[in-house]
Length: 172
Image (cartoon, helix red, strand yellow):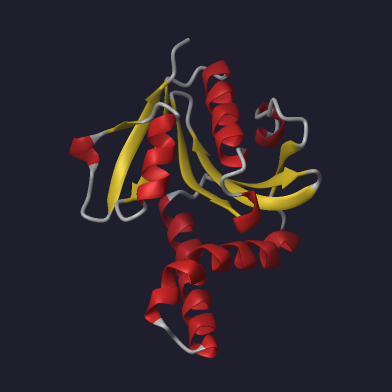
């Protein structure tokens, strides 16, 4: 199997993916903090406590993903050569599952997520997968609308109290 990063090719020449390396850990921690800190801001925690909580949640997320999706591949999203996000992707021959997609604030609402997801769908289709799936927090209404605009459908029977499962059927 070729590198997953070379299989997912963006139509936007400024965007590309590469496999995450150990040297990416500081970026991934900062990316996680940029996502979670905004969510936790309403708690009005002192800065040091917020940093502690975010660090604990980051470690928990890494461990949880490793336990539930041990074969998932972590890819760094680059725009003009600089890291702007991460895609965690679990692939099987018939189904590709987006475990996590996260972007830095400056890359959000700029077409990066749309382009990456369209590129993932095209690569999955090309590799013969019939479905691209993901789970999104029920509280993340922006993400739910984003995925719906891309053609993902709710799989109501797979929903939990905290997450909605969504799928995109990939036509050959």
